Image (cartoon, one colour):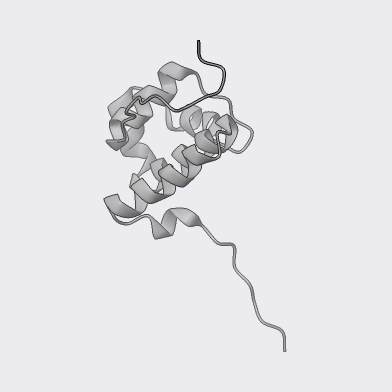
Amino acid sequence: MGEKLTTYDPAEDLASDEAVAAFMAEAFETNDAGFIAHALGIVARAKGMTEIAKETGLSREQLYRSFSERGNPTLKTTLAVMKALGISLTPRMTPTANRA
C-alpha cells in the first residue's frame, strides 16, 4: 500500500512574526520580483486574506490573482499589502563597482 502525499502549504508554517520576517528576507534575497510577490501572497494567506482585503480596500480575488505565481501586482498594491501585513523595507546602500 502506497503512502498518500499531501501538498505542502508554506502558509501553514508562518505562525510567528519571526517566521514571516525570515521567509520574506529569503524572498527579497532572490531579487526576483515574481517570487517576492508570490511570497507576499503566501504571507497574506497565512495572516488571512479576508482581513488583508479589508485593510487594503482590495478584493480577495484581486489579491489572490495579483500575488499568485503568475501575478504581477502594482507597486501600489504591493505596498498596501506590505503595510497591512506590518512588513516594511529599509533602504540601504550596497557596494557596487559602477558608482561614480
